[in-house]
Amino acid sequence: MVKIFSTKTISGEPYDAMDTTFFAIFSRFDDNEIIYYAESPDNFVETGAMKKIILNNKNIFLRLIEKIIFMIKLKPDYLFGYGSVLELPYVIFKPKTTKYIINFHSILVRKGSNNWPVRTPWFLRKFLFEKAEFIVAISEFAKKTITKFLPNKEVKMIYSGAELKFFTPEKENKTALRKKFNINFDAPLVAYVGTLQPRKRPDIFIEVAKRCKEVNFVMVGREDGVHDYLKEAKNLKNFQYVEVMGRDEVAQLFASADIFLFPSVQETFGAVVVEAMASGTPVIVSDSGAFPELVRNNFDGFLVPVDSNEIDIFVSDIRKILKDKNLYNFLSNNAIRNAERFNWQWTSDNYKKVLLSA
Image (cartoon, rainbow, N blue to C red):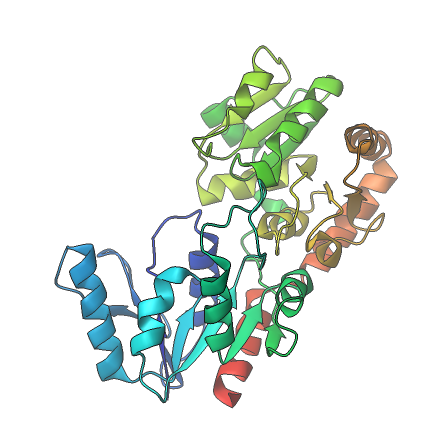
């Protein structure tokens, strides 16, 4: 029996990518082999290997102490973290026999930037990564950012995944989307799904909408509370913003849209890209981060270089796909087949292999 203690609290938020990943992986495990303990909301239902850590205190500091005591008594095989400075108390007090591993969904950088703000001092981040028994990176791109600074550290690459049975072309439902969100399907539709933050570059998406007025654009995602990207879209007749969509509705949108346009940079994976591909929607993404690992240029989507001409290329690629039905079908069919590589069963099988062997 392998016992895992998670430093991350399960948020219960549908947009928490790490929650989605851990649930997809550990819910598939048999609790006779692996048990994954995590602090969880009251309404969280234990599934597969996932078990709740029951805490009695409401005070954050007292809950931390409770969790540390629980960990010490449990003596887990693994302390399962994600490289946050908040894990420092667990790393300090963990039993000697417990191995600290980092499941890394970010990129390792010494200094922050507008795309990747870093608030943790470098010496603390480096300390945590050096303390880890090994690190699991969710793409080759993420792995390279670690080995750049820690060339001797063991880093295992296991791709993240998508619910391929959930995101399918059969989810197309323009009628439901039109009724609930008033989405206009009178012209071809280009979609964006993601938070409105600098790294995902929603301003590029809006600028493309300005230059491609014969096509409708819909942007789905919460604002980051800092940047007001939507002011540039005021009075833009072919643009629509939807703050929140449920998971079912996002699946409907992917299957109903004609193109998924995502100009994000430095993504360590990009599950929304795989979900759109699985839905049979051609994708146009920036040639950045892990996207070249997901999308094969001119075969199941388009990769656009990040440079001064990118907006013109985005517009040109949209028109190229919509003008040529044979090209559209070629990209769509290949996208569906390519997305099959990124299934959660493959991901969970590889995690099991790593956890049981280590």
